[in-house]
Image 1 (cartoon, one colour):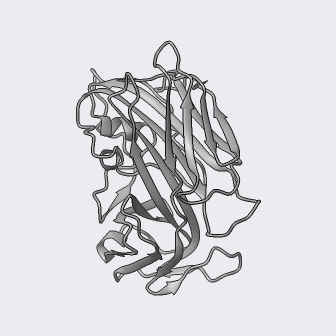
Image 2 (tube, rainbow, N blue to C red):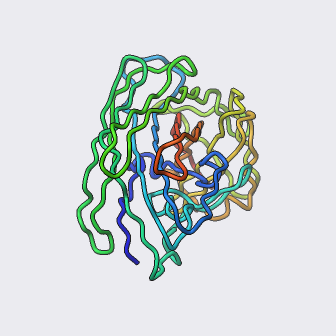
Length: 294
């Protein structure tokens, strides 16, 4: 299997890979074809509902790929995404590359030139970089970085991506309104806090977990991610204010006094990019909580 790619797309020690169900994220466009091209632009920022000039850096990532011999869904996973999770359902995130190898499969990352990202009065620049050859991974171009984009206002500000283009792909520009922060996150009715020293959220594996939050936007979805030891359970819900995680979905998690609950409000918008079959922007407003799993 000849693969030219980088395992990136907003990869970080804090958040891990930020992509969820590729087929759904692409705005309904099919990624089932075993040959084609795709493009993904991503922003993930910590949002706790407070206006502060000390907002943590946003994580930016992008990839444009041409592939054959495997599905677009598999390509997104190769680029650092999670396994496909249906709406209002949960799945276990693990090693996703097993079984994907094929003698006729190839993925080539493409260059769209420098990508400028603007929001409010802030701007960042993503420059195509080469990924050094490491074992099974050959060199390719990728975009990733952190940027201090300051305070943003939901639906009043928009992330604007402008790519200058290259010999491989022409340029483009797309703007997507900023999604709102997740507020009033509760587990089984108890408000959870990110404050240092606060009691960690308690999750009991033997019973269903009721997760609730404030807000409703039909454009958005909400991810509930539970991380315990080496296991990660990811649930994908409609942004209707609540989701019940069944006890069966919690079974892969282990007893852990230092677990983590990650909540994301995700907004996805497809866009037209010349020379690319499927392209979409994925914005995530993220909150991270300490958790205890028993």
